Length: 245
Figure (tube, rainbow, N blue to C red):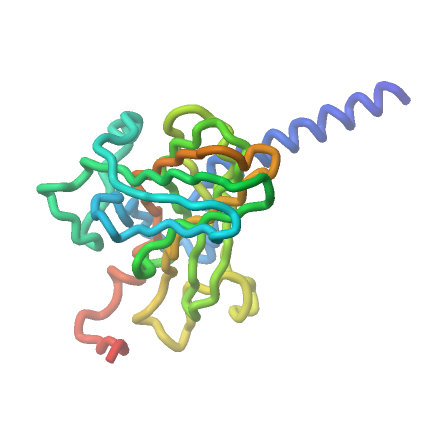
């Protein structure tokens, strides 16, 4: 009996490790793959290079904050493949020089929430599989979430994970495929509108741990990327009309 219990515990442990690896390192080839025809591409969504494009907010009852650009960024992103930039109008004169930092001064402990929002939602063409961003979290037990809008402007929160690490770390999240009924979940495609698909990034949300929501907290962001399936985008008939008028 003891031997059976030990074996079951070992299987459960292996299953837990496998699940953690799947969440931490999502495989874009296996997310919502309903066809063998895919064209996955790494695209640059934003490099946090423009002052004033990102704004941070907190309830005046919970604290006050400020956000600004800083020179520098994570050295680890130099080892990553260069993203496709045909969908991002990045000025090469200022590209990849800055990161965006936010300082939060909490008034008191509590379940405080901080929002870092773009001036306008950032669209990602194609069917997005994963989204990643480099973050310096300063080793606090707060939780970072990604805010997105789907094809029908429904807003969702996706957890990027805890901020309990030192220095820069790349956080990634998989975009769940829409439900088989095509009417619920995060909907990125509708068969009526083949010329319009994808989702938009609204910003980020920090859910503070009440035991560590005190004093000043600093966080930095850089290099927001996505892996997206551009097969339908690149295979569309060139003489087809666009329904965006």
